[in-house]
Image (cartoon, rainbow, N blue to C red; front, side, top):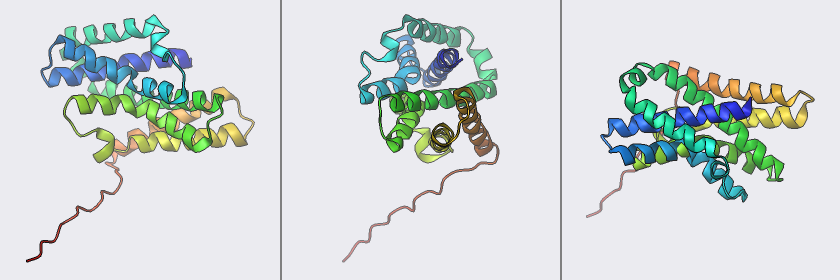
Length: 207
C-alpha cells in the first residue's frame, strides 16, 4: 500500500509542479524540470541526508515513467486538470502524509534520533514543494501562508507515539498518521488556520 501511495503521490506532485510551470508560461523543458523536482525533491534530500545513495528514484525506473506521464497528462489535459484543483489538493495532501511516513520510517530504520527522524519525515513531504516555488520565483507556501509543514510535524509526533509506546500494528500506525495529516491540512484550509506571523522589524534612523 505504501509503495502504491508513494508512486501515486509522486504522480500528483509532478502534476502540481507542471501545473505551476504552465501558469508561469515555462517551456516544455521547464515544465518537465519543475514537475521532476516537485515530485522527487523531498525524497532526494532525505536520501542524501541519511546516506541512502543512489537515491530511491534513481534505482527504480518507474519513478521516471510516472513523472513523464504526469507532465504529458497535465499538458494535454490542462483544462481538465484546472477543474480538478480540489481533487489535486486532496491528493497532494495524501502525498505529504505518505511522504512524511516514508521519511520517518527510513530514518528510524538506520537509528537516527527521534527528533531528527521527524524532521526527515517533514523534509520528505515539503522539500519538493519548496523547490517548485523557489524555481518558480514564488515565496514557498510553507513559509508564509498555510498550515502545511506543521501538519506533517504533528503527524510525525503521532507516528512516534503510536510506534514507540503502543502495541498497535504498523498498518494502523501508518494509516492513523496519514489521516491526521490530511485532517489537519484540510481543516486549516477550510477554516483559514495559520501560524502567527512574526512582526516586521522597523529600523530606527537617528539624526
